[in-house]
Length: 303
Image 1 (cartoon, helix red, strand yellow):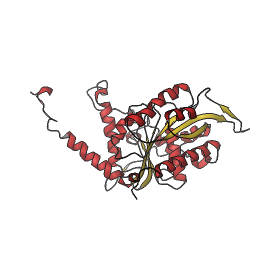
Image 2 (cartoon, helix red, strand yellow; image 1 turned 90 degrees about the vertical axis):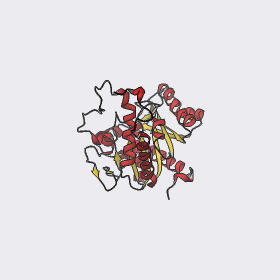
Image 3 (cartoon, one colour; image 1 turned 180 degrees about the vertical axis):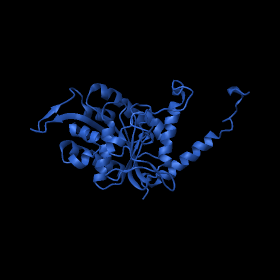
Image 4 (cartoon, one colour; image 1 turned 45 degrees about the horizontal axis):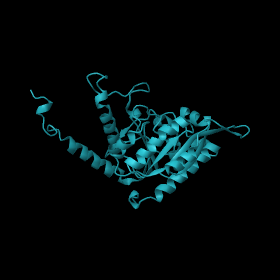
């Protein structure tokens, strides 16, 4: 009986060839996507997924063809926020056909593969305590399959909602043929900015990926009755942070409870409330993203 010391190379598994073949499929699949935009925060609790969904929705409302990949394997919320939760995946001629929402946005997420809302993501292992050894590899393998095996069609934008953590972007970038830019989301608190600054530096200095800019979410609260604006988080200067990190400041989104209500009810905030202060702010940030990627390198264009 052989042990691991007796195995040379890949042990005959051809794992390198398999991964290379799948990456080739990713490249071919995403050739019809003009711009790939990752949305990250580095810290949970800042409303990153909500921002990603509403920015994508704003561009869709404006007439762009937009899709969303939910890359948060263990905390997927995009299907519910976009209204496709419970819709079936269908097999097409060259892959899986993702469900589309009322704005005709295709959505892919691990949530669409689980048997019910309460089912957690579990990886095959002798015990779930042992699964941690393979979890990172299996999660990246799942995202690679979502990219390569989903019939995304022709899109102007594919938004990728990244999970919290500064370690996720390097893994995703390694799977993509190109990335048009990264949008970073924070809230005004000093604690959030402390962590988010690390994500910006990972994107800029380590991965050399373009940072579209910094979004200040839940910047203030606007009274629906009198229109007065009040601060939610004291002290934070996100615009100053953007200048310090030498990245564009895309704008601020005021807190609006209807954003959360729309997500809970699985309807589009941008369709129902796009003319509110928060909706107008999201439209403005979406315009900034569109301008940034359209002015970027020609190899981001597929014609």
